Length: 600
Image (cartoon, rainbow, N blue to C red; front, side, top):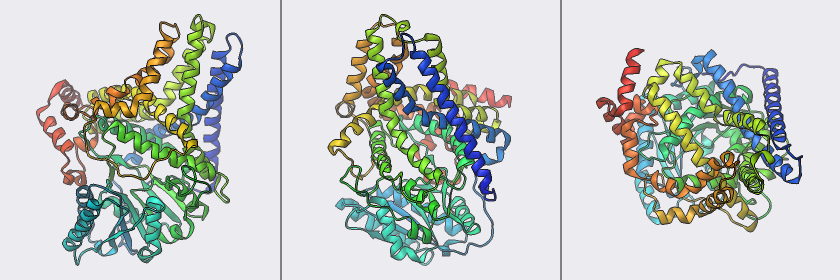
């Protein structure tokens, strides 16, 4: 395993200092370029507002850029870190592990399929006696509760005498998912050494599960071990570009961040193994003062638990490896926004935790970055609105900004924004096995270009959704921990308009305001994405389009080209569709793929 467990603390300190210097200097360069771009006519109050908003957008942009640079360096110099299989000490497992499937008003058929597959794989390895499965439910829909009870009984009967399967449902949702896990660990869970935390859509290969346990057993100071979770193949026209883009961006980003975060890594709340005793003793979440939405129980529990585990002296690490750990992505834009707004509310609660006593400096930085991840959205929106108002009132762009410096700044920002995806794409294009995994170089390049366009349209939609939501927080607006619609479904025009009318209105108003202004070329792309939010939501929810894209091979991921045995056993429609299309070589991309790979 590529955990670098033997590195001395001084080595990590040196890496963190270097990383902080790189990020800081890059941010200063960006702010300097922006100040230079705005200096035409002098820096006034309006320019200062733009500069402040721009500065708030830089932390995540610069961190992502340097994570990508470091990640690409590691991928090119140490290709072994990108292996697609988890391994571990083949010695016999000694401790007891509980597999926790955390659900709330979910589709029980998916939960049953995933758990059944994982149980079978663990038993086949011969290590079944060291595992138990507990289904932890917070469901309050009567039909879901009945289905869950039936599911649990079926699983218990099927695996009776081989692996115990239990069902436990709370009468309330106090403390959300984190509260459910904590209640369990205070009771029956105390008998276990480790807990594998899963969401309803989580799937893990038995090799990955056993690898996590063996790594935990061989490293007593390891408190949380997080896998790199990737998306399962989907027929959704919305999920396909998203899963493709995340697959490109996460590899370099996670490798780079693991290089400097090291023993103070992230925890994403699922597809991860925790050491039960210190987790239960040290990782209890505080009840935040004040009313909802920013007070009360913490929604985004995971990174806080990681910080508390590290405060207690235990390590938190992420395995920067692809393979063996999957989840499903939201199938439509409205579902994606709903999930993101829940994270937004939860991350903003961290504002009240930054001064928590005893936290490691890196943990505080991680909490601050989690806050800025969403605060950067209104900063971008205000930046664009201020710039729009300024350009709309000016005689021309030269009257308010320096075009030469502005062009340099724009190139710098775009490079940093897309750096994680560009880094992984570069590595894949240099490796024959990497190109083949994504369907060949033509499909990989076409997918990257199309995903860039998709991301450019999606970014302003999400930024405005975050901004509108945060504007309502002071007035008590909040989100409940509701069920997610994970299955593909249509989005009607009326439904899309009800949820996305603010984006449409802002996009239309700003483009009309800019009109034929010379500076419109700088800002129009941002507001075009907002203007087309409604048709984007409707079109990307089309089943016909999703099937067509899958058959064409656009945004193909490795699980569609050469499925892992665990993914193959799931019998996913997207995998079957992609495999049928691959055997017939359908489409121009299929022909180009065959030519390019025959040249290898």
